[in-house]
Amino acid sequence: RKEVEQDPGPFNVPEGATVAFNCTYSNSASQSFFWYRQDCRKEPKLLMSVYSSGNEDGRFTAQLNRASQYISLLIRDSKLSDSATYLCVVRILTGGGNKLTFGTGTQLKVEL
Amino acid sequence: GAVVSQHPSWVICKSGTSVKIECRSLDFQATTMFWYRQFPKQSLMLMATSNEGSKATYEQGVEKDKFLINHASLTLSTLTVTSAHPEDSSFYICSARGGLAGDFYEQYFGPGTRLTVT
Image 1: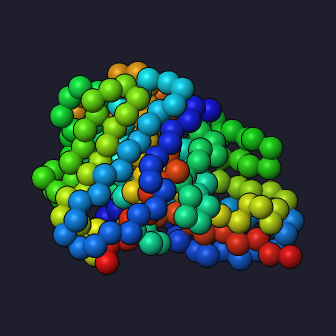
Image 2 (image 1 turned 45 degrees about the vertical axis):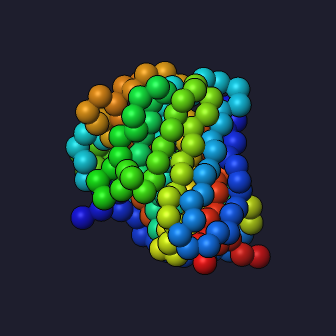
C-alpha cells in the first residue's frame, strides 16, 4: 500500500466550478500535511499547509482528519490557471529527522 | 520564499557516461538537501538525504554507488549519475532546507533537471 494515496484523475471541470480532492495516508508517524501544486515539467510548489482545524486561503480550503488519516482540498470558483497536478504531501518522522512523502498527484484541468 | 537553483535544467547523454547535477541554495544556508526522482505520471520519490559535511542517507532501493551525492558546503550539493543507462532517464529535483535534521523548516525545491539517456 502506498504511504500517500490520491485519485490520479484527471478531473475536467468548467471554469467557475467547485472541485474537491481527497488523499489518505497510512503512516501514523505523519506529523505535518501539505498540498503542493506541480505544473507540467516544473518543480512542485507549496500551495498550503493543512491543519486539523481546517484552513482557508482565498479560494482554497484544506481539511485534515487525523482519526481517518484523510486530507482534502477544496477549490472554489475554479480558474483556468488552476489547471495543474495537486500533490498531497505528508511529513514523516524518521530516525534522526523527517522527510516529505508525496502522493502521485491529482490532475486538474479547468476548461472554458 | 527562498531560492534553490539547479544546473543543468536538461541534459542528454549517451549510455555509459556520467552526469553531474548541481543544486544551490542562493539566499540561505541549506543544512539539509534532498534529491528526488520523478518518472512520468508518478510521484516524487526521495532518493537520498544529505546533511552538510556528512555522508548521504539513501532510501531503500537506491544504489549509492550509482548515484553519488556530495554536500560539501551549506549552499551546494551535487548528484552524479554514474554510468547512466536509459532507465535512469527521469526528472531529478533537489530540495533544500535550513535548520537541523529534526527541524520542521520548509523545504524549497529547485526547478529540476530533466535527464535523457540515449
